[in-house]
Structures are given as C-alpha cells and as structure tokens.
Amino acid sequence: MCWKDSSHALIPRAVRLLVELAFDLRVLGDYLVYRCGLAGSFANSPFPRAFHAVMVVSGTIGLLLALPGIAVFASWLLIHWNLPVVPAVVLGVAAMVGTFYALRRFRRAWMCVNCHQVGSAGRLTGRCIVFYLFFGDNWRVMDQHHAGKALRAACDWLESEGERHSVAVDLVTWPETWCELGCRSLPTRSSVNMFGWHTRQMLSYQCHDAVSHIEELRSELQTEISARLAERGETPASICLVINLPYRDMGLALPVANDLGEDRHLEICLCGWPPSPVVYAHELLHLFGAPDLYLSSHWILTEEGDGDVNVRLREWRELEAGRSEVRAHFGHSVMGSRHAHLETACVDPITARSIGWRDADSTYIEAVVTAERVAERVLAGVANEPDEPDDVSVPTPRTSEKRPRRRRPPPPVQGGEDVADD
Ligand SMILES: [Zn+2]
Image (cartoon, rainbow, N blue to C red; front, top):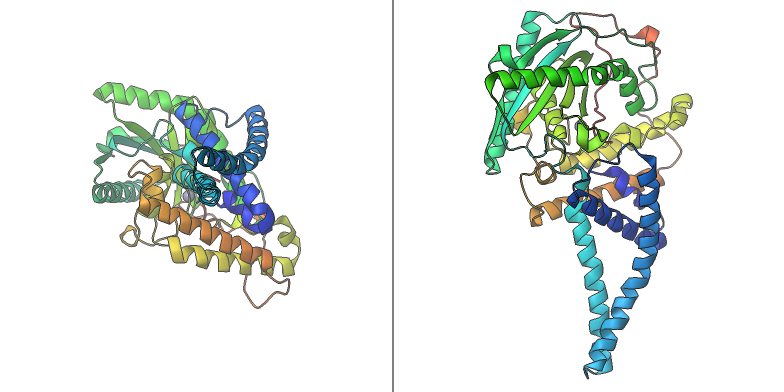
C-alpha cells in the first residue's frame, strides 16, 4: 500500500480535492512513463522529479478549470442540439462527474504502476532461477541446509499461490551446487545506535555496510550468475539472488529497476536469521514489484520521540492502533503482516496485480479502495491523537554497546521490518 500517497488524509477537506486531483495526475504521468518503457529510469535524477512536480501542479490547475469546462461545453453542445436547458445542464454536469470518477478509477487501477512489471524480474511467471549465497563467516553447513530448505518452502508456496491464480510459476533452486553461490565475508559493521527513532534508519544502519558491500559486488555476482546460466544453457524468464545475512529478523529487497533505477539486471534480496519461508516469500515478491501492506513504524515514529518519553509513548500508541487497523484488513496477506507460517498467508489482490497475476478487476479495485480508506483512518487517527500518554510499554532506546552478545550464527540484533519499497 502506498501510505505516503495517502498523506492527504491530514489535509482539510477543502484542499483535499485538489490534492487528490494532483495524485490522479501523478498516476497518469507514471502510467505514460511506464508505457514509454521508461519506468525507473529517473529514480536517481533530481531534475525529472522537479519537472514532474511542476507538471503535476500545472496539470492540477488545468484540470480544475477543465472539469467545469466539460460541464459547460457538454451543456452548450446539448442546447445547440435543441435539448431543453435544464436536462442539457444536468447531462453536462453528469459528464463532468463521470470524467472525475473515470480519472479516479484510472488512478486506482494504475497506482504504483512504476513498480509494475519493470526490471529484470518483471512478472512472476514462467521459469525463474533463484540463486542464493551466504554472507558472514559463521554459517555452519547445517545452517546453510536449513536456509536452503526454508527458501525451497517459500518457492513451493509461491508456486501453489500461482496455481491458485491460474499462473504457471516454476521457481528453481536445484541442483543445490548450481544455485548456491557459497559463502562470502562481510565487512565489519559500524558502531551505531541500533534502537534509534526511525526504523528505516535503524535498518539502514544495521545493514548499511552489508548493502554497500553487496552493491560493490553486484556486477561480479551478475557475471558469476551469467556464467552459471551459460554453463547449463539456461535462458529463464527471470533471475533472483537471495543473500542470507547473519542479522536477526530482517529482510530487505534491492530491486534494480523498480527502486534503484539501475542499468544492471540482477534482482537481489537480503534475508536475515533465522531463515524463514515467510521472509523469503515476502522479499522475493518485492523483487517482482509487490508493495508492503503493513504500517511501517517510520511513518509514525519521529526523531522527537527519541528524546521525549511522552512523545515516544504517544507515538507507539498511535503506531499500535494503526497497525491493528491495517492488520484487520491486510493481515491475511504475505505482504501485510508477520506470519509465523506461510499456511496462514496468501497473495492478496493488490500483490497479485503488482506481480502480474491479475488485471485491475473489480476485486483489485475493491482492495485499493479499502487500502485508501484504511490509510485515511490510520493517518487521521494519528492527526487527532491527544498528547497525554497512557499506560503502554515501549522499547527503550539503547546504545550499540548494549547489543546482545554475538552467537552463532551472529548476532541477534533487533530489527523486524523491511524497508523494501518505501
Ligand atoms: Zn516488505
């Protein structure tokens, strides 16, 4: 769900129409870029973003004038065709309202289109080779075996969900000696506050060294994988690389074209310890464009809360309330909630649409409308939350010196959310 795209809930209703029109136009712009095959091309360039903003503002003003213009023009045309004035005006206004709702439906059908079916792993269908490797020095053979089994369980589940959606998916993780790329060392991690105010920052810090290192190795890994594919004469529909990291309860996707605007063609996700089929499935789906459907803490927690216990209590209360609301509607999705087992999860309509398993049918539109309403309720709840804290328990920030002792596989540090497509 694009929570950031629902921030208009905080804006007074009078201005909301304008903001929604701007959002409708932004989706229209994204759609045109997507259709031109340029999705993801401008991710790292500030100029197109500024240009995009100017286009959206001017387009919104134009649309505000154009919508009444449609009513006036349609009424004039009907009167010109000898229709009485009153029915002509009614039909003219109906044409304006119809255009407005058509635009709204278009937005719902194509929101986040710049993440749909782009990149080397565009659509989760056909034969996909899943390579994997281990980063860190303490992976025992049995740990690697455990991770391989969990990854296979995730692939089996994705295949069965594909079958449920009448899509043929073949995720290949065998033979092990071919799909497994072995172990690599990790650079020493920086000493940082692991329990900071911002989950995104926290995870960025936690994984920062590993991610930088992996980005440096991306070309080398791509060459190695290309050689392995050539060795067996494989030309699969898509290729993914799963990197196992020794960090507890984390997952992070690095989809090249969707988020990073990279030219290179290796889709990588990072999964932590202990190996979990749920995390593997969730991160693999990100590589094919699936968005998160949970409320990430970095939409609620602020830096202010890190230094003020009352603010922190209030923010955590808001976060818990928001998460309950979101979980009530999207908790069944593998992208929406932390499931203990894949048996309790499913690929929901929003995820299915983003990975190319279904069109923007009525079920999908219904799910998007639900997402919009939930986002509005959650964000409005945050805006109206009183300042007085109540009795809730919240994590206390700690310093990196208080991190738990390293164990094998090392080390369990707090984490829990991923930051894949925010
Ligand atoms: Zn995620």
